[in-house]
Image (tube, rainbow, N blue to C red):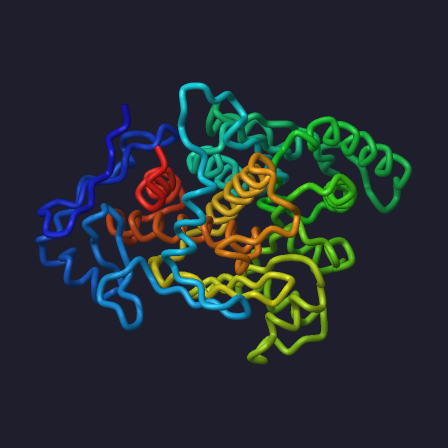
Length: 404
């Protein structure tokens, strides 16, 4: 059985994160001594981190000495962090003896090519570690065996057509390329209707056949009114062709600084303008946008804004964004499932009608990812990598929302 991480105020030891099932024992780092000169609790606090009695590394929010981070909301009346966390706790599935496989979420990640196999794995594995029951990955043939070798937990489908794998020149052999894309879409559409949420983008690369397949898949998801999240290379595709997601409300976009700038430039919006996110959201007229940064700023299509927690870590390891995508997508799946189970109307809003459903999902997912990053950094420091965050996400969900 995996050991449970324990992080307590005043403790002499900060126990290492539980051992990852997909990492060798040689890479595990021993427990960090908090009372030592280098890693003392006072220095963690100076970095904006605080070891809380709840077992979470917490932030010192503005105007509050010891909080889980501060949250500000606009366009939706006053909403406190406590209200948002309570709403998130309500949608987190309970672990009951009469539950069945798939009840806590069936998710898919579309991503992965010869060059990039880690990103789709991080997103897919995070979905499972947050608490989803099943996680599928749709990738190219050249990536499938590699991703499968990372973990037997993932269901991997090598359906995405790749020019290199198929030996096709997409420009010169257009008929062959079109057939390959058509066959891929047919294979994927056999599976897509089953998923509560789909992550599009991690590790897709730049192959034209892959991009053509993803574009049609987005259109098909929209036709079925399915929920999906666009990140990484998925943002590259939708930025070049914003019509793919314009006016569609069942999607969350999670751009980082550079991706956000490319999106703003494509829409002819000054990225440095104070209202740039408002203008981008209005221009797209549907998606909920999570602008990643020192604080994640979440804006829904109706103008509601949540400025997220200041909890986090100073380390920027490759794959952290993929972990956040998996967290947010899982909360999207839970939100949709909760609304269906409780018979809520499509225009239902949380927190007494003040919070758009996908904004709540984005808040819950980013909150978990940031606390996981803070916990992982407190233990691993400079050596922290994306796998360390994945080790923490399930524990953080339980600590934040106390739903067991």
